[in-house]
Length: 344
Image 1 (cartoon, rainbow, N blue to C red):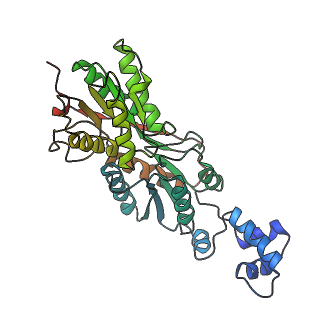
Image 2 (image 1 turned 30 degrees about the horizontal axis):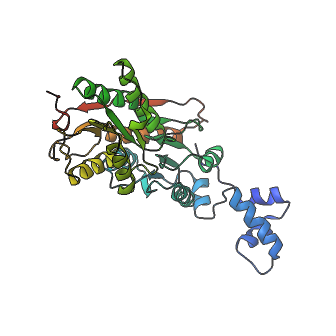
Image 3 (image 1 turned 180 degrees about the vertical axis):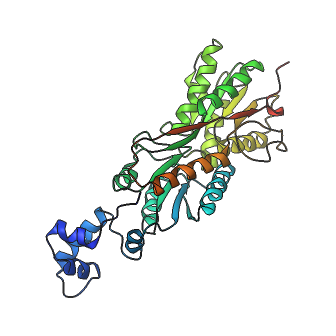
């Protein structure tokens, strides 16, 4: 499947101009009027016209390049996903271009636009924490750009997706805290618009309901940028500590939120788990040596990257249009360590 970028001939036909006129307008030739240049430029931009050498590479076949969009490569989870992607892409003779959104919707839109001005065969993306509207991706997908989502996905685009079993991860961590004897379990998570937040929150609520515990919204805190800024995690913690019945355990739902929470609780002199227990999502290889060793939900990030890359290459190399899409759900695993010892 090739990304159907429009050509100069397409623009000429749509605007009722000659190919020569469009070509000159795009080159800002003095022979063409300002009004015509503006008309051509606007149409080209709206319809994702991409100048050579990209158009030429698409005509000849595949450019052997795929784009990757993640929040930040410093996150252990995403760095492991990228390693998985690269292991498949390089073996198939494809190169990768990696961009970071830093949880910004605006930067995600800019990165995607920049990537599609390279010779790109397909896109692998995990949405930013701010992303609510995926029109920028729908537009490209309708034009034929193969897109595969991983981790943070959108239900608004029909394509392959690779996710972890987030509901079970949230359920397992919360159930463990309940069984360990904790009574007031708080939840610090990413913004409610992203898929992983909804799924992990559902697991948290399911475990509480099964145990006959009430769902208390005062114990659920959202970080608008997914913990990008330490301050938003600190605000969440301070609000929890200010409650008349402050939590005796906290379940966090991302690498960044988890490690930041651990840091802030230690900084405040709060003893873990004696004062407050902590369980969270993290793929850090240092979970065993943190202070204290951290009970955590682990995601198969490398495998997620491999699966996503495999599925994208299937779309790119398909001889026929693909109309049947699959969502692969990979298992999570709970590792119990000293940050959540049983209440005696």
